[in-house]
Image 1 (cartoon, rainbow, N blue to C red):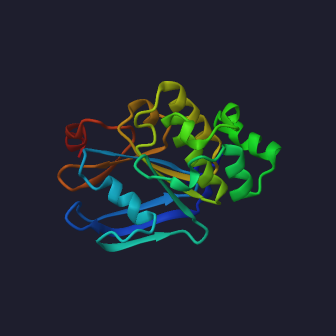
Image 2 (image 1 turned 45 degrees about the horizontal axis):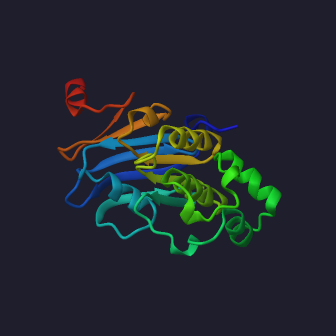
Image 3 (image 1 turned 60 degrees about the vertical axis):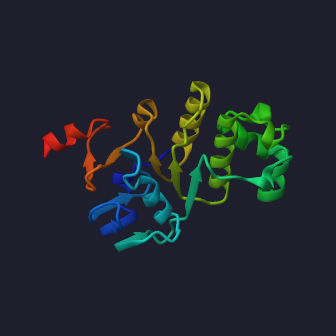
Length: 216
């Protein structure tokens, strides 16, 4: 059963007066283990840089960001290339990289509705199937905090639904940058990165920044 973060009391991410240089004004934030946090806002507002910082990349910033003691971040972006997967079947990848025999591999693939593609090469999959498989790999690597950058971008509805179902079964923390209104509805919390550099939390998805400004 998936744990809802506010009930665990275990901090996964703590930001104190965090400012991404030239992108946003300082903000503080606590995210608890198991929470689903949608990161919303206009392009160029710092959302992807924020995920990259959490993933451990060298992103210019001031203030502090701290991951929980047992938090293992895994970063997914549609732009990531994976030449090491080309020409290899999904079952082979799971066996070689994660010591899953065929039965265990098919069980893992089934959670992301990829069991029918088990004997297909990674590069023969659709974009949506590749995205789901990459997120499955992050999960199997022991990732406890998924950092997803536009995970449903260019996915058809069936692939997006399968991805959402897979994430529902995932017990860790999820932070996702998204412009997908349908996908965002399943999240617990919503951070809006404004074009004015301010980061605000809202009780529901906000796509029109003027609504946030009027509420303050």
